[in-house]
Length: 89
Image 1 (cartoon, rainbow, N blue to C red):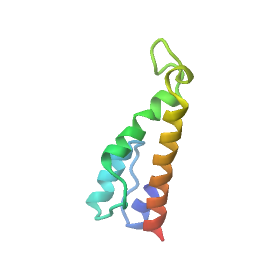
Image 2: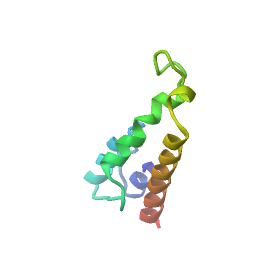
Image 3: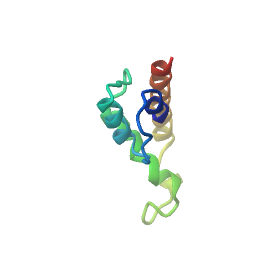
Image 4: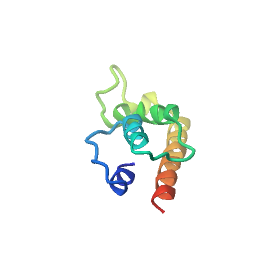
């Protein structure tokens, strides 16, 4: 998504928020086909909790997230990458 910003001459955002990046791209007139803001938010919610062992009070990511959660996140992330690649040509 940041590569798409660069390709359109936009300023690269200093954020990890996928929905925020999508909004910035939208304001530049860029739409990543097939990607919904809701889907980005679902993936985004996994960002901190899966990376930091102390992000989930009383649990660790391995105890909280399932294999199905991981598989779904991989599908969504692959869709984001595919949409960005398609835009970039």
